[in-house]
Picture 1 (cartoon, rainbow, N blue to C red):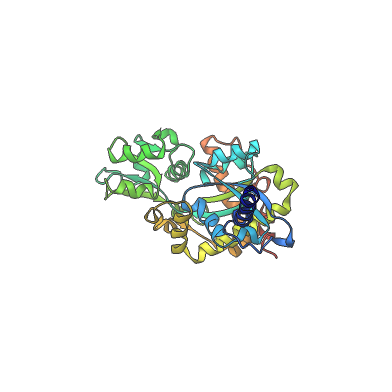
Picture 2 (picture 1 turned 45 degrees about the vertical axis):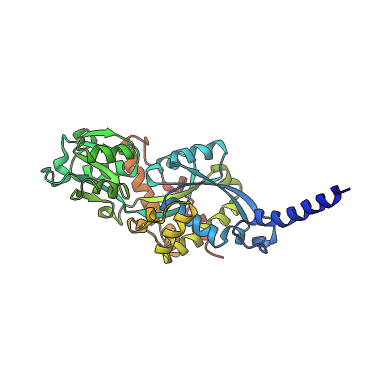
Length: 338
């Protein structure tokens, strides 16, 4: 005869738990735009500052629920894996660094929003090596993760110095191997980025930076981006617009609170706060109003065109396509209208 009481207790407990589970960090009273049930969106990201800060802000400030969305977030180790997941329909949206931009440029996804501009890449050499300019790299062994922003800045630097990749010994290495190889003097130079360079500096504190990302700005920039499935952009612009509003509002909070955003990102990723301290110093975070203006006047498209030109040189693309074929600039700009 005790069963009804046990069942009633269980149902009461379930009634308490269900709203909490459904709402997450968002306001329980909000059902999003128009009062409709939230639309579920599957969103990929990378567990670093550029890849997660805006999502951390959106989670903290209830932006998903505000715009009628319920996210299912999934972490990835790189951009190409997310493009693959978009193509297979496993996720709806994702995040890529500039080194993976050739994939949407080749038609595999749509770029819906520029994110932070990367300022972290460097070409570095050992102190006292006798290499004082990029031109001095001719014939030298250079460690570089192929197809990354490090590879891109190396190509830019070589071109500016009148050299090509064939004039140097490019050794394809994963990022952690570059750190080890450079620290052990197994390579003459490296094309790599912060915070990995901070790790290298522990062993080679006086390393020399031959060139850096900022040397090419504003004519060329290295934007990370948020991307979406081609079919979703074509068939459900309303949901894409809602996601863009979340991203833009999250971006604006990060831009105005960079130090706090570093700590928040660490909390979001369940990582030590020290790991993200100073992360914003090697990125350029533009307010969304400025990004919308740059999307409207063609400047942002110019960044993607510049990247595509590099990808042609690198052999990633047969030709440099019009960014309008893969960057939804008008959709990004109009998302901030309301």
